[in-house]
Length: 414
Image (cartoon, rainbow, N blue to C red; front, side):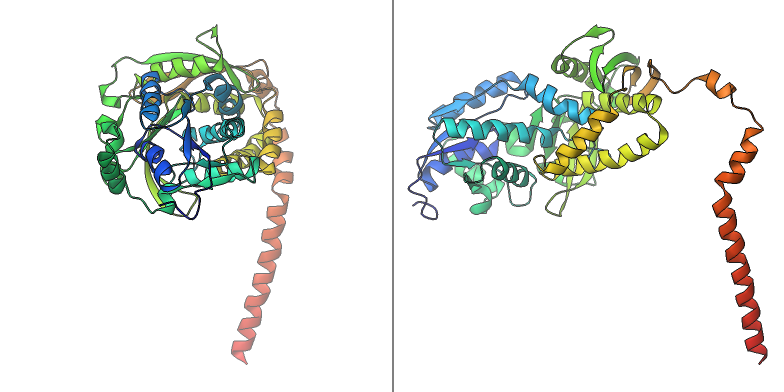
């Protein structure tokens, strides 16, 4: 039986990940929507063995094909670089790893859907999650006439229902995916559902693959020196390398030191709160280093205003609005602000902590000689003028208060 009269559809492009939801969707779409399925699995830096296993599974489940483009360099150069320059942290904690990946996935999915003659794009997002918002707003922005299927939401599927369906249809599901909902790319890994739903408890160790627990890390600190050019990391410990390689290397180095674990309560786009656990070793290091270098080379007013812009940028990216013109305008400001963010920052990584251990830039605004050139007597006039309005405010307010007090006294006497 077809769903809502969709039996006329010919091909649906499924945004596929290999997890529980999308594995079930391969078969579900064929049965419930009456369409053939073309799977699209974006390689954004997740483990290669998982990609190969997921690809083989789609073909065994009856998909016409599974298209797996290598998007690693493009993801790093076009998306991660922008997030570093914007100090991209949603609600001050989450480095937007999953969110950033969604937009490149949709860009390529729309192109492939048109090439393959697909008239619909399907995803495995739920009605309470951020996935549906990011995917669907982006698809509508890039292909307004494309039909969108959201089977989990439309059929009100639960994970238990999906597990039962997978068992009935003999759909292989990784044990980890049965227990948790996981998304991973080179910028980080997110884990939710299962035991994670209990926010009163520490996350179990079995979920961590990018970062070790801090207490299990070495007893000796590691130092890394990150070179920047126009806000983008270009070298690690003096060796120049593409951003993709730098991120991959730093993930291993920082992750082995217990860096990058983020356990937070997060405000989702749809209004509910969720408990999320992230592993983002490289992201945590690079954003901290970038922020520190900005403080060295940018003026006070520029830094303060950029914080406002960065916060708005992160919110828009998190809530699915990457293709909104405001993001484009904010990117223009962020690019301009990063023109002098050049130099290096040294980080000390130890037991999960990241501490700045030095920095330098040819554009540095910090110079002890400049500070020594300030004449102490100049401060007298500065303080007088700087606080003049506050002084006048107090004087005027005080006179009015005194006058009002006298009036009250007179009225009481009468």
